[in-house]
Image 1 (tube, rainbow, N blue to C red):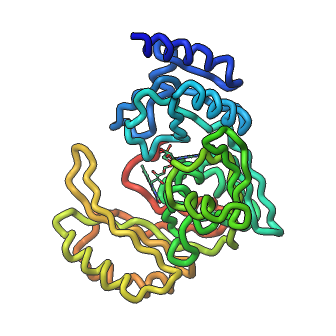
Image 2 (cartoon, protein in one colour; image 1 turned 180 degrees about the vertical axis):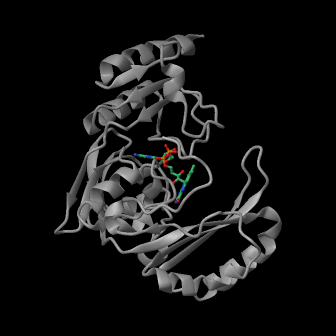
Length: 311
Ligand SMILES: Cc1cc2nc3c(=O)[nH]c(=O)nc-3n(C[C@H](O)[C@H](O)[C@H](O)COP(=O)(O)OP(=O)(O)OC[C@H]3O[C@@H](n4cnc5c(N)ncnc54)[C@H](O)[C@@H]3O)c2cc1C
């Protein structure tokens, strides 16, 4: 009982500790604010804070440390686990600044920036970052987990493209982290997850935007064996410019499907030669051949998806 009373007092003080929006249980909008992108996960939280900026993140961490509260950063909730009971859920969508230096081929972004927004900003300069399958995933969330991209076979993981992080550490101190300043933390942040610090900004290296040919090809699930075998054969000696993903899909109310997602950084005729084995498989479910991204300026190179995108 004593513990519960202290807890409530701490949460009430939270509104004075940070400048961003604080929502507590019972507040209008609290349930919507704690909901992750992944609606299958029910996510309890002691409070939801939308940080105004990096200094606000630092203020929150210092306050939480003093009050014995955990802080759970969650830009979006694609990777929501629901293990947030008693924690302050930290939303960082307001940290959404993007600066592209086309000469240095670098981008500096806030930790709330979404992959699709970064793609649009870099495409404007004929450059690209490393997009994955969802344009609404945060670049920070993807990089902290490694981040597999449509271009990964040619250019590596999203984490490989990070050259610097701005973080708030467990003491509530703002720090710039690079391979030179803090090699161990820099190593851990690039794929080790979000438990080492709260990332507030990143600097990434960019690539020239190549011409892309790619798309998703779908078959009925009963053909999974032959499709998987074709995938194994194709990937055994595919050039680095060709990325293939094999996916088993089972949407509610639909028959299971198997898919191969293809991305080729090169001309269409070369892609068709490399993927000719797919033409010899059983008839496809997908009504159209692979989608094309005709020019780098068309932004995020995302093959067509059978499920509607969600913001
Ligand atoms: C439809 C869909 C498509 C996907 N496609 C791909 C893909 O192509 N390639 C790929 O690699 N992954 C993919 N994923 C996985 C996705 O990249 C991860 O789940 C990623 O963490 C989601 O980013 P988010 O912004 O939603 O993070 P959230 O789910 O909001 O956060 C996930 C975790 O990351 C950590 N975290 C996030 N931001 C910060 C921060 N600023 N500071 C500290 N910790 C932080 C926290 O520990 C948090 O719990 C996909 C997921 C889905 C649902």
